[in-house]
Image (cartoon, rainbow, N blue to C red; front, side, top):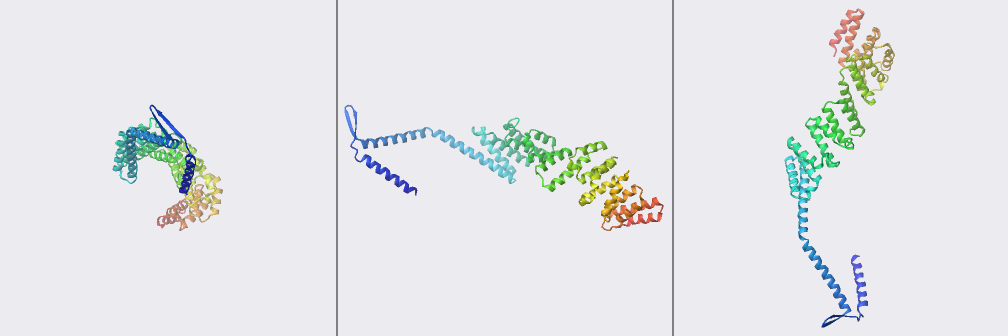
Length: 415
């Protein structure tokens, strides 16, 4: 179709030229004393067009000839730039493939080409990336001295403080990650503090902050960071729940007295205080620190819904409840009886309720509940042995030495 259009255009031009120039009798006379030249108008027009074309070609040729050195310079610059870019890509590929020595050499080659090219020295990000690739390779090679030197050069190129560019942000994050690998949490926090506020809230920055906090044994800071990560969907839901639970328990374990434990408990997020396992750990610590009243108060909301808890959560609550039994008030008894009535054959529940009844010196009720726990073959061995031992102590309290001896023998011979 394109050729057809060109043929039509040529035909139109030919027709116009024939109709215009075919019957043109005009004459152009050129006087140059003492000569005179007469030319037909058609020939003069053609000669004028040919002269213009010749002048255009001549001027273009002269311009290209004069600009040849500049074009050669640009060509050499383009070759060097391509070589530098190729070396940088090669270094990145070798780093990903685990060829760290070769990756470092390729990055150094890119830097050497940049140093020899004046135009490339103005490209700050190129140089910074090359230094970061070299530093990453040296980090893998455990050469910390030269790694820090390359990192310092990269940050120096980016400015002090570093310019808010992706390369500068990446350099700070890499420096933080390397500090964590070196088990230097102080340096990691120092690098994180130099990040802009928006970058510090990104998932990768929060992950690094979490690792630094755990490395420096700051469980409360780690817990806050992990909660932010969970909010940003940095963990799978199940993993987030487990991490937050373990960190909350670590925070509680830092308490050294009852007052400190109470302060830590209030500092926890409401979601952590609603976790039965976390609450159970807090209650057990309260018992160790002579704050059983606080521990029972923290456990009571979970006791009211004991049958709705999962197996692990219920076991943790029951164990913690046994720890906070000393001084159990009477208002707990209806709650215990309702729980046992709902599941009379639940051995751990029967054991905990039996221990509570024994604490209140209700020997008959305690004996019946502990017998349920001791005779349940599906219960844990340790729980059945404890149940028999407490039955022996109850028999001692009642003065039945024969029954007490039988209970102690069953505790010793339980399998």
